[in-house]
Image 1 (tube, rainbow, N blue to C red):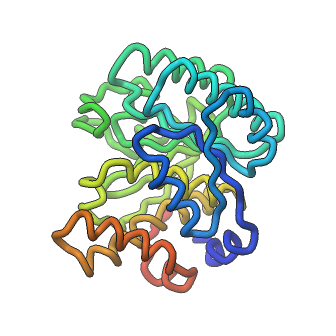
Image 2: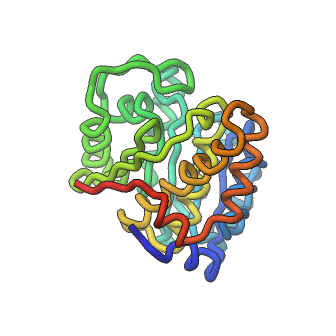
Length: 262
């Protein structure tokens, strides 16, 4: 793991530009801010390129897809490629409708993404692997999630993060597993979007595989600490998760992160 990641984040304060899901921008901005990043949101395509030049990382979210959001993602993503900064992409519910599949393919045809973060159903849809996705949720499938992640990473030439009870991070060859988990994360809508933002912050420091794997563990470690205080109160749990994100340091992360590489 990256043993000094949080210290580097607080030292550098990476700027993360978000083309956000309309449901979660406040949650995402708070998460970015609490671990030491600087969030920016963009809603007007006319300033997307200018803001992408300022940012250290761009996070693109398919969640509230519409023509304006698609234009924003294409402009911000292409500009970020030009300045050679990382692009994080969350293909929310990509397997749910033909429109989402079409817009995702258009984005991937025109933007080289650095990291894709999704649940198993979303990543399976990208990889062309059969999976019964349930709306925005992962749903059910028989394929091995590690193989799903590796296939997608190899096809799309990027790092893939599958979030779930066990998080999987791979570049198509090396695989990291994060075993930290708090089940109440799944009961709070939009926490995957928050993880996207945290990955964006970390990628603003470095987008290497070890850094992305370490960053993937930040949210579940904070959530485990929060669940220790609020095991059966979802709203209090999520507020405490943010408290723990703000308090988290490298020593605590190193002590609690259950990160396996193989």
